Amino acid sequence: MHIQKSFKQGGATLYLVSTPIGNLSDMTARGIETLKSVAVIASEDTRVTRKLCTHFEIKTPLVSYHEHNQHQKTDVILERLTAGEDVALVSDAGMPLISDPGDQLVQKAVAAGFAVVPIPGANAAMTALIASGLSAERFFFHGFLDRRRSTRQKELLGLKGLQATLLFYESPHRVKETLCDVLEVYGNRDIVIARELTKVYEEFIRGKVEDVVRELPELKGEVVLLVAGNTDEEVIDAWWEGLTLVDHVKHYVDEGMRTNAAIKQVANDLQMTRQDVYKMYHVEE
Image (cartoon, rainbow, N blue to C red; front, top):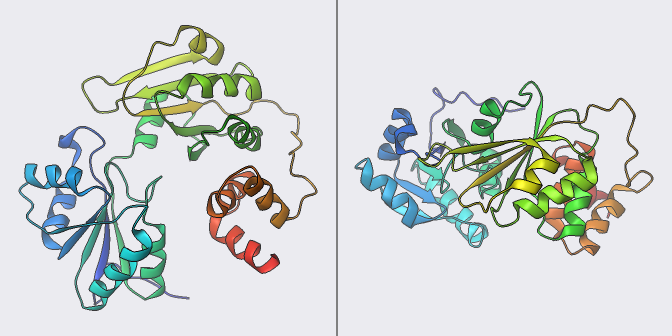
């Protein structure tokens, strides 16, 4: 067991700094102070972060850290932490790690004994949820659904029995076809499309999925799709009943998913943590 005392622990710190999802006024004073104080900012897209830094007169050096270089850059950042330098991790918008790279860095930083300190702020999914009109008492965040229809429908089916509000990120160009899958798999549930949150064109589209599919105009910008949870009392049989965990993962791999993505989906199906599924998969394989 290890206890982290974030404000009393000595040594270097990895800060996870939330940034605005559209409206720069949502940047917190603590976030600005942190970005000014660290030795370096690890950024998903340095061009986006540079604009933020320019606006708030933050002169801290930037290094890129994104899904295509995270394996290489994780060790580089750990070396800087080992040298005693504080590091901040930011994504393009919102909270780091939420459908953005950073898991690997945080896990290795924790394992190495460094303090990992979150700096809270805007998050698109939570912002959409509280204004959606759907229940915020229980919710399940899935992130992006698969682009392929067959796999996307399997993902939706795996969540069908949840009584929690379902939260998805989706491309504006795929919203209508995703809604058609929602209608086919879930029936005519209440849904909400939240678009361009905190920006001047912020918009909420609310209604039954059948009506929204029929009347939905062409969308632009960032989209959060929310689907009301299951209200049926009947128990829904999962298609994976009877499969071993390894076979469950391999099913998705055979559908074309990468192993890590398949493990994430199995974790969603079984309502387990991704780390537990990862460990069990590699032990049983």
